[in-house]
Image 1 (cartoon, one colour):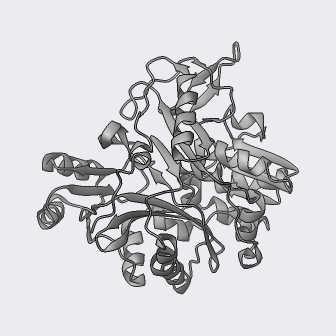
Image 2 (cartoon, rainbow, N blue to C red):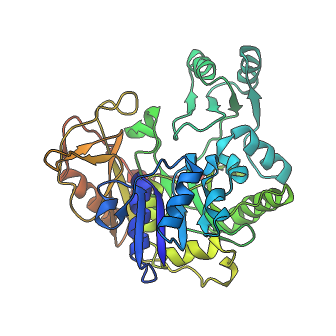
Image 3 (spheres, rainbow, N blue to C red):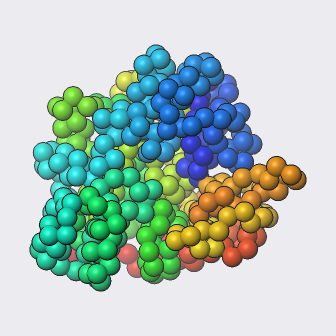
Length: 416
């Protein structure tokens, strides 16, 4: 199988490692890729938000499968353009990707499908924002209605901060706050059949103990030793299958990766958000434990043959990933710093580039590296991940020191 992977971040490096480990993959191309991906894939240049350009590249590469990593090309219709060339694409259509591209659309789908989620208002002016904030009270949850690279949500006790975020975004969704531990569940689907991966937990705030602003994610771990028995079955029954059925009813079936972001509340799991692609950095931890060949799984979903795919196999133990971020992230990350110690197994490149002059590895984004390790249990995986972190040298960098700490210590409890 000849596979073309679209994207350039940590999620795509993790996907690349999973794809090349599949014996069915003859060659892997990546566009535009990054230096880490370039060690396992042939790199190609492309503007990945240009559907025609990506489709043309897929034809040029004689791809048997195109895997679209980020949300922006999916919302732009890249998967549609690839499929129009007769090439299987793993990723939803632009119409179905609105589940991530518009928070208001996602809420409408959930309401129609009877999916448990937070009450919410769609707001576009100061008056409606004020009424919504009055109704729900603090803590205030204000979400940019459109794509915001994982940083469009403000959760705050400070009303002026909430109002300012709403003004800056223009169109927002304001929700009631959902109390309880959060879970990320990835579901591979061909639009009819749906197969869940291991649930994971990520860490959105920049600082330890969930302090500071939201980021794209500072770390993750899987599986969840504290998760209630039957959680995944309940989410599939009450959330995933009703959502897929509603999208089919609307004539926009969702085929690809449905990301279900959940809060485990006193009344059970409720949806915080849907995404239309693998989450970052949860992908790094989840795929580190997947034993089933990845390309075959994604190809089955892309070709409508998921029902015939064998059950998934998972490695024993746990996985933890810790993000090393650039100085100034998430506000104004500094780039162009030399990185040392990143050329070892387990370090996934998220924001890196090679300097043309001497080949030095440089930082090129806010989240620079994802240090990912497995272990016999969560404590062992956590220790191994932080050992990788200690081997990285990047001036001014920072990371959270508490990834998976509460789970290891048994401090996560389910409300009620």
